[in-house]
Amino acid sequence: MSFDPATEGWEQTEAWGLPEFLRPMWLRPDTTGFSLGFQPNAALNNGRGVIHGGILATYMDHSLGRTVREAVGRVPIATIQLDLHYLAPGSMDLFVEVRGDITRQTRSIVFIRGMLTQGGKPVLAASGIWKVLSPKG
Image (cartoon, rainbow, N blue to C red; front, side, top):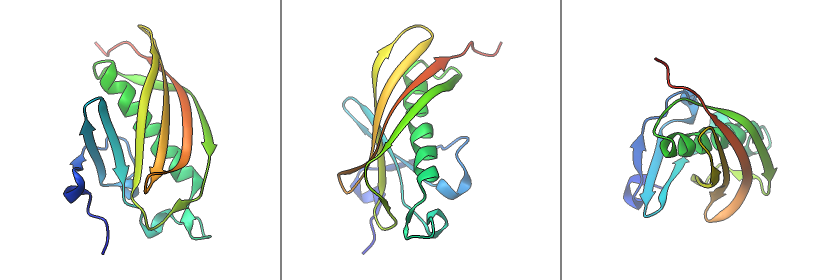
């Protein structure tokens, strides 16, 4: 039986700017924010039976960026720096979940850390810095 995010409290959400092959994107709200997730598919295989590391990096960047964007009132933002630490191979069989936590925020810069997990086990850890851009007027 395959994992059904909807029965586990996840809801489909907009995935603006995310490549089609990483959709649908799922969101699960909680008392302190939200997590984002996706179900791997065959197109994400790196040829060795695990999710390609670049795919995990893309998803981490997108997920942490979304966390920052929500925290700053949905104004435009840009990634300044994203440091990644691959901890385990990404399984093709398990739902991918990313949780981001803002560690510091100024008017124009946001610092965040995140963890990508599968089945509750860490796969990719990240820390990043995002720039808050002026809203287009």
